[in-house]
Length: 362
Image (cartoon, rainbow, N blue to C red; front, side, top):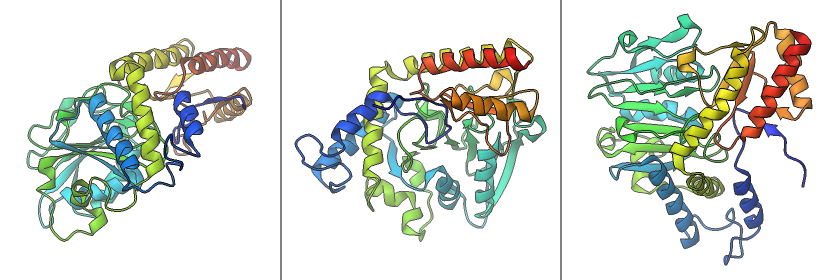
């Protein structure tokens, strides 16, 4: 087998090795079926078992109550930027509050504005998107249709440590980058959505967790595939879903349970991130982007003294088997994405590389 390198990519991201190995074994034929999961009907009993197992796995891990639907959709988080206001933003009156903590929040806001009235409850641009707002900085409308946040900004490496208090206004969250990386009180949210390709599986599957009462607010006459009720009423099977992606997601949920669940995963993620943050803080050669109180456990972002050194760092790291460390083109710098399946050994290898690179170039 070709030796695997350490994959720091922000997404599609590293998957658990046991999951990849099982998928490899079952690629040509699921046990007792004689076909690949990519060949079987999405309405077969075999796939239904996989589908229901994946949903139950998420319910068990996240403690999702019965009054929430678990949906597997397509189009990524980017389609949800439109679907959410289309379904939940009242036409001809009312508005939604958006809290902007980085690039993905800005993208969500841009799409919502196309649908209706939107208010910016806080925009952390003045801090260069290095932190989340404090409670007194939020200008929330108690009559808003919903409040939208991005729980973890992948590009800037900024993460909410606790949810904002929104009172009776439904809280909606893009949790693409940190879903299932730690325990989460689903009951504090009315809707959670996440692309699977960071912590849950491959690209092509979008998880939506939506509370029953929101479905009652959706206006009639929406395009069928853009209506959350279509997918809730048809158990995500109105059209052919990403059967392979849901199969992998099911395996990842089982793997997470084997690791001890989300509490154990959170402890491991804290330990991994701390290794790198300690290396950043140990010298002036490296400078963390996010404020300490808002540092992401999933995406560690930092800068070097010059862009030239950053390019050299990324190039030499790749040659050393540490791939995907170049920061996003919109912000530059270095970004180490260390999702659930990323091994601690990779963080240790990065820290050693950082020390040696700093010694030679500092």
